[in-house]
Image (cartoon, rainbow over all chains, first blue to last red; front, side, top):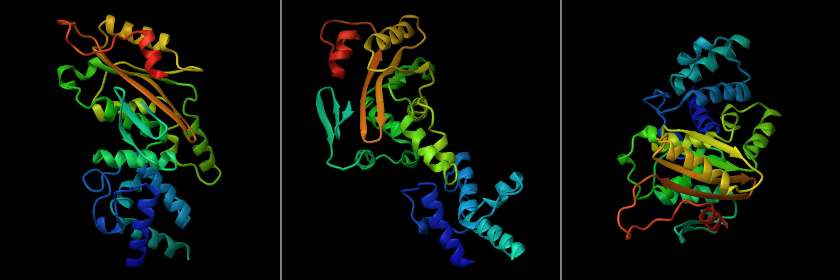
Length: 87
Length: 196
């Protein structure tokens, strides 16, 4: 899980073009949207693209978005759970 | 004015760089400003150019003397958002990028400028084959004379691959008091002379 969280931080920075942000700047449980990293709705769509491109996961229910993308850890947990289901 | 790796204001070079690409030049010019605006890196090159140009253009401009609704933006170019369109098209071959898609309209640069400087007045983006001083002068003058706006950013902003040019003007409707004020009249000839 820790390796996945670190990988995700690097991938999020690259995918969202966060050039002023370093992986260590992003807390594992830090909120990604609004008061945390300050991401917006377009960034949310880019995170969906990231899941599809890097992990072959399609977010099946859009209503899950806020829960899945709350923090890097919740994304990692979603990926882990999805991979366990499909294994 | 921004072209050939230089930013010129009022006839003086205010920034110059030897960066080899447009992307690197825009990033270096942004960093030189010392502003913290993370969204800058997410913009397409047209929006970056407009954002940078207005940062320099509006230095020293006291916008608090106007209501946000009284300040507008009217821009033009020949290639519309073709630069961003082609990049988006390239992304579609693998997976369409929402972040690129949002810049596939030329007037998005107006949105970025308006958000940055809180301009909420009339705006328009014209596509013309070449710089049309007459169109801009007439359109913006009408907005000012009809009291739709009190101040307006207008001009030409063009990006296609490594070719770029931004010529931006800040036009204000104000009474001329005395003869000592320093200003340039908003005429077609003056626009053409500055553009060239």
